[in-house]
Length: 320
Image (cartoon, rainbow, N blue to C red):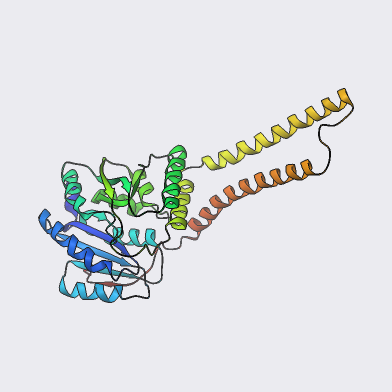
């Protein structure tokens, strides 16, 4: 445990983003509370709720009435899991903060080991997956490709097969608070902040109930795209390189065509089909390059507007 950890009045803050999980919340609490109590430290559990149509909010309010260590933040609208996670982290008051999903795919039984690593002096302790039960093949493929691309081009190393399930010391939390980005790519932001980090390997379980309410494929692709654009400018370099390559190839093909025409008296290409294919190829390259630049311009536009990363409609059981 670092000396900076004494800044919080509690030992641990547990941040749990929630969206339409009325069946899993009671199971989560029954499994989480004995684990936290066995550690022997003070804690709070902060549920950050994306408003939905089920009884999740009602169930959480009833749970808070029975246990003062529980807190609830209700967002003004559906902001998405990354925004909810950052809202909970920034509202936490513990010496360390642990982010975990309510679906129990990430086992809370790892928390005591995380706390042990924290007490050994590590500022970040992240859970690294050995296996991924309950995830579809497309989800696994998207994750593998995403991590491969990000780690090939990212300016900071981001551990593979990790999610938001991690422990962060208070000084890491303060570092995250000082950052102004709105994308909420937590694993990248934590890697950017730095400090001493350690991994704990585990096998990811299936969901306790139902299916994820957050989109696995499009959500993962959106988060991965944020990771690529936010932590590397290499795609812009790739677009430039691709442009020079296509232009050079076209110039070479032109010289070759003229040479063949002079020597044989006939051109290499006849008919409209090759011309159509060439134009389509060049158009595709141009659209790819414009798309890459558009992603960066879009992120610049988001940051320049300086809109808040999230808005909270109500806080329940927080100290003034």
